[in-house]
Length: 473
Image 1 (cartoon, rainbow, N blue to C red):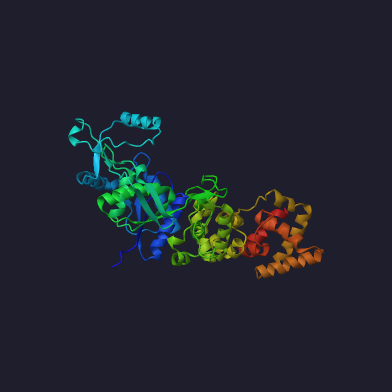
Image 2: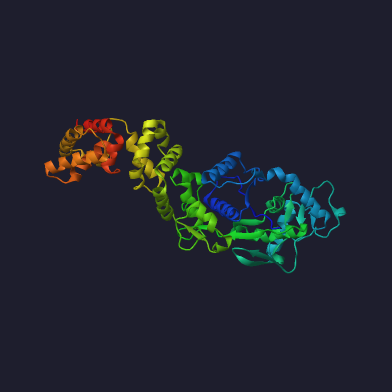
């Protein structure tokens, strides 16, 4: 019987869910869903000084916002310390590990001697074959694994291919510190084994760790998982990803107005592709994803491409769904909470009605909220500089004629108001824009907006005529 596919995402709660971590979670999630398996979530919180509950909460919230659901309850690595200790002590009993009693000063001297002799600064194995009876009284030793000294360790990786590590480069590393706490290297192996993880999909910066972790698997006689080390994400300039490139927490992308589907689509395309397909739904990605198709080379993060893709997704999203997405995002946007405070049932309905015109011009929810700002403006509107320039004496004269014509419109709609304004422009012998521009400035306080006749229709007769009248003076 074939074992079920189980992947895991194992973030450290020392900060927010950054964009690289989100892509790792996505690849694990896609592969498990494609194979009909499960993705587990493990919080690697053994670093008690740097791990925080706030960071854990932020990671869970970020995953939930992206829709990357995990199976079962999140597992705390720190909560499994007794099990990690048990396995380390079992390895000592099996003769596969041993207690070492060097002081920090002795270890420092060992490294300095190695450097002076031109050798790598590694542990020299001085306690590897010593009799335990030689242990200094009252001193708690650290447990070190007996790493192989000859030959090589072969890592068969689904992304990187076969990677070989000379065993002479693998020292007898610590698996349990003298204070009884496990090292990351050891805890990860025990957890992955106990959680029955079949596929470890993680960043290729862990590749050297894998060679060491295989020593523990071999020592315990455990099945080694399938490895897949995905390339890191670089900036558009090819340099290591930093905050200036986009190495931000997922919550920052939410505040920048990106849709979860668009962000997932973009992250999937960073290092993986399916033919020439650029725009992919979640269902498409699940159906198409294969870890063997991930590229070896580093992917480059490009904000311009993300923004363009987000614009495509906004136009593809239904008006009601996009309205809900915007409202849900308002608490995270600058000025959003104030808009949310003013959002009653009437404003919500207006926002929904205005959405077709709003989303055609916006690439992010920030731009969408900005374009929708006219709906929340309170009379009398204070026009910005460009709009004020349109409301000079000539502009107000045209505006007065438009107000008179629109006052006679009873069946208020985009079409009926456009017909009335066209009559004004023809009677005055000017182009439609000469009337529409001051009209837009009066209605929205800006020189640019969605179509002015759509604005009239959404605001309604009373509000529109009131805003125009305010500017005529």
